[in-house]
Image 1 (cartoon, rainbow, N blue to C red):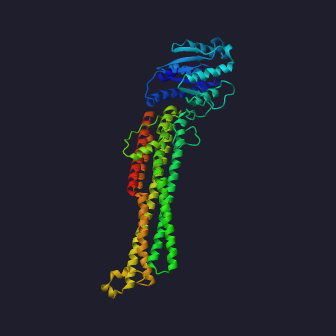
Image 2: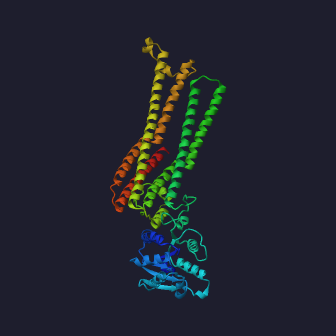
Image 3: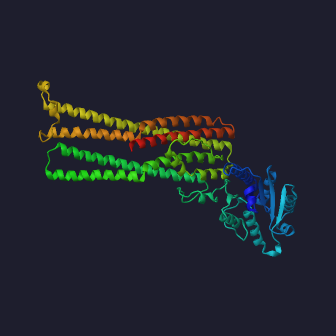
Length: 516
């Protein structure tokens, strides 16, 4: 049977028997989509197009529903596993209708094999049910579990079978018939344990694994950005203070004790700056921020696609930089693709999906619009400060000129005299003006460096473009008439988010290489 599992797609079922008609009706499309997902997964991940075998014990409830879905499938066959003899097993079917359905399924031409696993005399009835459930798990590569996610009340219940399947690292797709909104849950897939080695992983998984990873990577990106900004703010401020101390030492004629204290303080400031720079170099906060922000934005787009019930959008981009390979290796692309391929499903109607997309687009448009306005204010503020510095140094020069020389002696102006050291010119104003000569250019350079590191102008252009793009998407959503048009709109949205972030990522990587 091990070779048969490799040569065929074998899908088993375990589920509750006491489901109402409404629950069965609600569960049916979810089971159908789970089967479609498994076939699509095998084709795209395993690169195999294999025949399908459905296995069921055809008990009332989920097992019988699954068997009927299997018989409707054009490209699969059904195998039935009876826990013990048919004559004894049929006694567990309460109504005549259930018994007739049981007999009909056994006679179906598409049923290739009926396996009677044990004799009732060989053990306890519940224990034989448990053995049958485990046999279905052993002979299947995938298990669809219509399960309330609670422990089994007795031996052989659905909870026991699911626990056994998880222990065997089977692909378990859970549909909880008691949930208000039915989804195919990824929480029980083995990929969450096997595919996360060496990668950041959420401490706890919810029903939406893609969103869990987005929240995690977004949080990591925000943290690294905050630490990076905090380091450079401190470097600028402490470096600025060190420059002020140096300017005071050079400009004023101060005592040796004061010189010693200021020099010590200056050395401390410079040492702190060096330590902060080394901390950034060793921990790579900015590099990590760029990487995890890039990943988070991809996950943000994937999560929207996933919530709308679609398979992951394939964005094919040639890796053109070694740094991008490192980013891709940290992105749990295999895990997310597997999760989305196996569990993509929603019962939401088209209008609700359009509303979800519209909410996303409007939110992104507002975010980029607000960011553009905020960055423009910061850029203008920075520009005003730099202009003020230029005006200040020009004013200092003019004042110095007019205080040093009279209007009548301007023709004999000695430029070298303007920059004489305090030892040569003991006047306070000369000392103070010399201080400003040294300190104002340092301040100007500081704010120019702030502008360069933040790269406001490029971010403003990017936010302006993204604001226009999401506004345009918002206008198109109302014109969507079917699932295909909605999916095409999602493809356009996902590609733009990816390419815009890729462009920004490559720019910042190259910029950092220039700095270092």
